[in-house]
Length: 318
Image 1 (tube, one colour):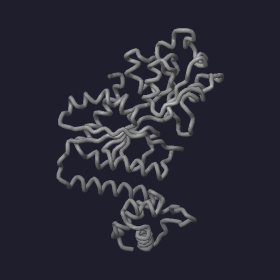
Image 2 (spheres, one colour):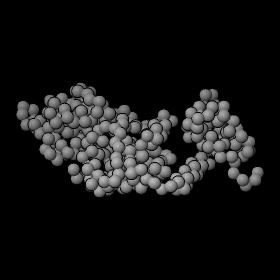
Image 3 (cartoon, helix red, strand yellow):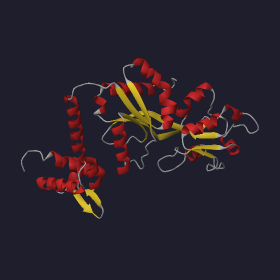
Image 4 (cartoon, one colour):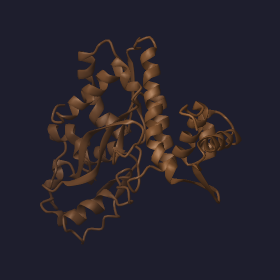
């Protein structure tokens, strides 16, 4: 075999099929037919003289040669995209689109955004409130990987709640997370004051239905287990589809919610909410800032990314 590279289309077809582990999804991504992807992959195998996939019943499996080559091939395509972006005229639109979960956008990002406007009046920011992405078992499934791709097609940056295992994109850990019970200060007084975790049995538990870990364990179960409390029924209480709604109910003294103090920081600082107990359980999950390496080349995107990371280093400011 000569030292020449195989056809670029064949390499791209293989990379896409290997990333999705699906000829059909690769075809959708590259706007061709599955038969065309199969033909390109077969041509690449013939060119290299090595098998890249094992065709199983309704599934694909990478060979050892394919697994060894895939990370470098991905890096190569990323480098090509950056090179093409560098050759284009360096005109920045002065606009940044960021996607985040509604609770994070409302409770953390929006109260701070005025500081970015003050320091960068020339940049327009568009905020898209999206449901957060959940990964399971430390690996991204095909559906989850496609979701990340879709986010970055629609946005320059995405703030995701997860483990940070997002291959093929630039990932920065933005904020570590803890969970704790949060309530109105009114609940530490009255007929059944909250003084110790067992007192939760006398109060309504509020549930943020997005507040679960990757194995499906609810935040209340996690905190009560860490507190050594076994006689409080964590399944009872009122449920809300977003943390914002659950925190509003807590602020109105309707009960106690187990969620991220990070999202309640403004209410805690103003005294509308309190942490009735000292225990905060640290999670392995966190908020991560994700962007493609191509988008990061734009000065407006780089400025917003740098500002977000600087703000995250000062979470006490509101």
